[in-house]
Structures are given as C-alpha cells and as structure tokens.
Image 1 (cartoon, one colour):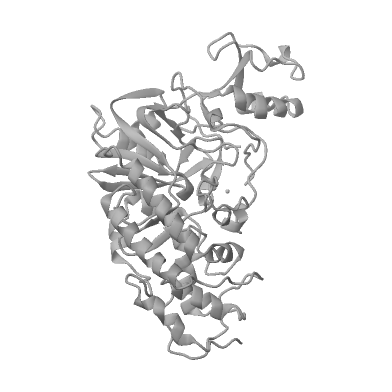
Image 2 (cartoon, one colour):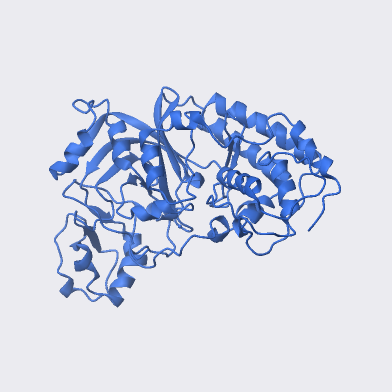
Length: 467
C-alpha cells in the first residue's frame, strides 16, 4: 500500500465534514508423533445437537449470494471469504433462535471442561508434520469443524481433512482463510469455551436491545467488528458490503440514525481536529502537500474568504481560525459519493479511492466514518423509491454525467452502527469476531495487535488525512 493513512489519536467525530454541495469527480487515495490414547473421548462432541463435520459445498450459498457479493468475492484475493452468505438479518427472530441453540451447545461444552490450550509455536502449513496436530484436531472436533476419527492413533500431519477444518474454523472466526495454523488462528482457538459462551450471551442481549423498538422494514446495518454492512428490506438481506471502520483511538460509534441524502461529487470539509492533529503537522514537513491534494484554506468558516498559503506561517498558525476544504477531483477523500446521515457523532458513510484496503480481513483504518465497498450499488438501493430513481442504473447515469448532484431523500433510510462480535447462522455455524474496541469485557477477546487477527496484514500507510 503506497497511499497514505493517518495514524494519530482523535475522537471518532473527527471524520465529520459537512458536504455543503456536491461538485465534480473524486477519487483520491487515503492516506488493516503423538498418539491419542483416548480417541473415543473426542466423540462426545458429536452427541451435541447441531455439531459435527460441516458441509464444505453449499448450493444455498451460491443461490442466496447477491450480485454485489459475487462481484466483491471475484475481485478478492485468495483466502478472503468474510461476507455472510444467507439472507437472514442480524436483527431477526431467526438469528436469536440460532444464537439460543449455540448457547446451549457451548454450555454443554463448557460443562464438560471445554478444550485444552494448544501450545504456541511455528506456523503449521498444509502438509507439515507437527506434534500439536492431535491437539488441534481435538480442538476442531470440539466445535464441529472436524469430524470424528476411527483411528486410535492420530496422524501428526496437517492433511487435507484437517486443512478443510482449519479453513472452516478461520471462516467462522473472521480470520483470513489460509488453511495454515498461524498465530492468529491459535490465539482464537485458545479462547476458552466459557469465554465464548459469555460472548454469545452478551451479543444476544445486544441484538435484543437493537430490535427494541421494532426494527424498520427497510434499513442499513453496519456491524463494525465484522467489517460488514447489510441492506435489509422486508426482513431479508438484499445486499452485503465490506466496510472500513475506525481505527484505534478513532472508533466508529454505535448509533441509530437516518440516511437523508446522497451527495455526488462532494467537497470534503476537513474537521478542525483532523486539521490540528494530522494536516498542520504534515504541512510543517511538506508545505506543498495542500496544492498536491487540492486542499484550500479559508478564513473563519468553510465558506469564508480563501487565504493564499503563502500568507500563513505554519509554525505559528491559529488552527481554530482557519478551515480546510478539499476540492472534488481525483484526490478527494470521500470518493464519488457520500451518504449523508443524521446522528449526534457527525459520522457518515462514503466511497473511497483506496479500494485495495477492502482486501484486508481486518479493516480498521478510518477516522471513525465508514467506507463502503460497492457503495454505488448501495446508493442505488437506497434511492430506489425516490421519484425518477426506480429504474436500475440511475446512479451510474449521474456518475457518468460528471455533474454534481445532491439527492435529498423523501423517504430517509434508517441506519444502525452495531457492535456484534458473536452470532450463529441458521445452518448451525457459530461465528465470532475480534473484539475490536475492547467492548466485550474480556482481555482474551480483545488483543490490540491486529496481526494476531490477520498475520498477513501489511502495515497501513502512515501520514495523510482521512475521514
């Protein structure tokens, strides 16, 4: 990643920038040989309803995937399988029933003593031999990722069946799906059954609270720790999108609001705190940065008198007096469209030119706002019931015209930013996600080192400014 991202502390509201008018095209890059003498003991897990060897082929998954999901998956790198694959919303009675069944299973596992920790060590790759393989097999059997064995002695090899089970485990836990038993996979496997049980209970309560009062028939939900957005209509998910959320220190808040407008070709009004913490320090090192990025300086307000950069001493500037506004264009931070939301935090959703960041499994890169992969498809869905927007392709028509447009919605769409780190699918698969902001109350669930979540994660680019 050679584009830039800022990395200093600030509140999530720092990403707020009011789009006063939508103006011209925007695409700037911003800147995540052991024996098993008690083989029969591993079979008790098979007695728990809903557990057992999973199916690795699913026609339903293919049938229920939206066209947006298929396009996103087709463009994703190998091992990138993090979008949910069915039409069940997170906020639904079906989801609560599935979680209840998962809680019962994990209660039984915990009552039987759970599973033993697996020692740390080198990464185990498919085909490798390792003395920890029998313990890994037992761990995978405990949660139904691997079927039972008829053999008294356990092989020490990470063979095809174990690799498939590891991949299923990684998929359920939001890890990069590689088939390797790496550090991140071991960290997740060593979280105890009791802790996973409490995580399920906690997230069930979260979902119940989000469903009260009754959820709307049509809404958008962003699950922040899952890095995923779902658009729901008639109690069924119509679209799913990968998202980028706030990094440490600039957390994306939990909220309920409304999407009130679509702003095409927006200005970006740089929030004062972002300017203070990120932009002005950079200008002390690189005075040419403003002209390179199409950022202008204004006196007193974003609509004030423009001030030539040559008149400003960046070592003594009053940051509370000046405002920065980035022109629309191929460097603009908001991309081509911004989804204007009403909420007390001043955050919103938007496009981004940094499409490559969606290829990371851990996507906490923003200053609190939410960047959406495939945002044009989402905008099309949002605008569908607006006069003149009922036919497919209207968003593309606006983009192709290159002309600024603000579409004020006559039917605002409710939006929820949620924090759900555990759930269960109707097929019995139980899912867990990294406790990104340490809100689950367990140190074991909230490692701040995202490389434990995704060892292949390259460092985010430093510097720059970003919503």
